[in-house]
Length: 107
Image (tube, rainbow, N blue to C red; front, side, top):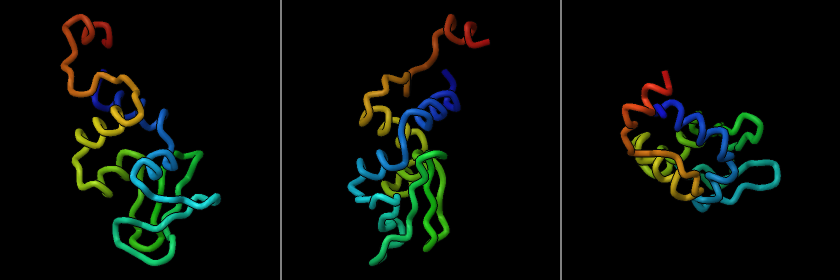
C-alpha cells in the first residue's frame, strides 16, 4: 500500500466527528465545535459528515481528518496517519515497507 492508499483508507474509515471527539472536542448536533487551532469562545469549526472533512470559519483552515489531527496535535502527516490508524484500530500497514511481492501485486 502506498502512503496515498493508506491516507485514502483512513479518510474513508474515519469521520471528522469521530476524529474531533477523539481529540476531545465536543461538536454539537449540527457539527459545530470550538476550534482548537485559534482558540475561541464560540464554535466556528464545522465538521462535514458527507465529505468527511472540516472547515473553521474563524481561522479559515480546513481539510481532511488527517489535516485535523495534524493541525490540532502539531504532527506531520506520517505521525497523524499512525495516530488515526492506532486509535481506530484500522490495521493498516502504517510504517511498514511493502515486500517485493506486495509492490509487484500493486502494479
